[in-house]
Image 1 (cartoon, helix red, strand yellow):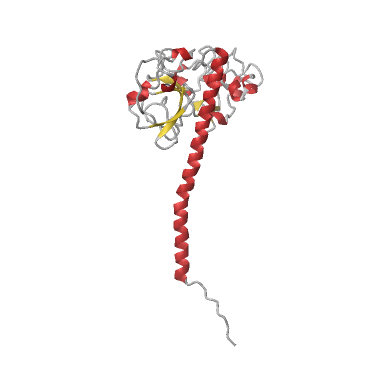
Image 2 (spheres, helix red, strand yellow):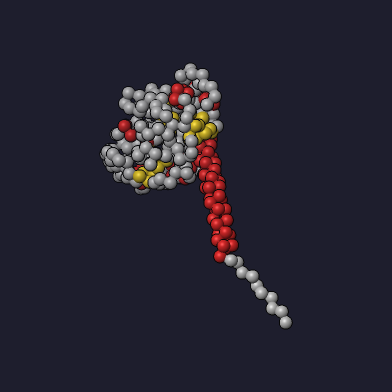
Length: 286
């Protein structure tokens, strides 16, 4: 009577199998990460696209694009877009007759409403804080802003540094009390930045942007809602610059509503020319 003997794996064969599996996993993980980042980048692009549609709808309603920020109450452009981003109930609760930092009038107050986290204003590739208290807690008429909800999409201010001398004449799409219309964008809507990305934490050591507006009576913090092209894309010297978590560059919304990924190696002059609405520059390939 014969007995069938079952042959088992030898130790060497088992080690070879384990090594092969390890190699396959090592090859697979980067591909998974790349696929996830591609999905996040697509979602970020879609966020900017929706902001572009909202900007155009705002223009159709008000015959102008929203101001970068309003000097009388410090509300920013992203607050004015809320009704065009399916956020009318939130918009209707704000008290625009008092500063954004108001902590007394109404219930809920402006400062509390400014804590609302809005996914439409956040790039999914940025894992930074959803809320952040500004470093400088200056006082407004009746209060301060605490834990203001963050945003990754500042408006385009222009090619100069933000400050009292440039608040209203930076040459960009959004400035203090601006009222830009399509006819004012003489450089062409397809060659002018409207909005770009910013994800500064860990990139340059500065804090996030915010969507609701700036700290009342402290104009130096208008870079919270606007960005400049004074420094290179993803540069580390200016907290008011554009930056991104996406490898190699950042995504921008153009004034015609199109979105485009811009390389961080773009020529600085071309980059700055893209941020003016009426500079008369000729923009080539970039």
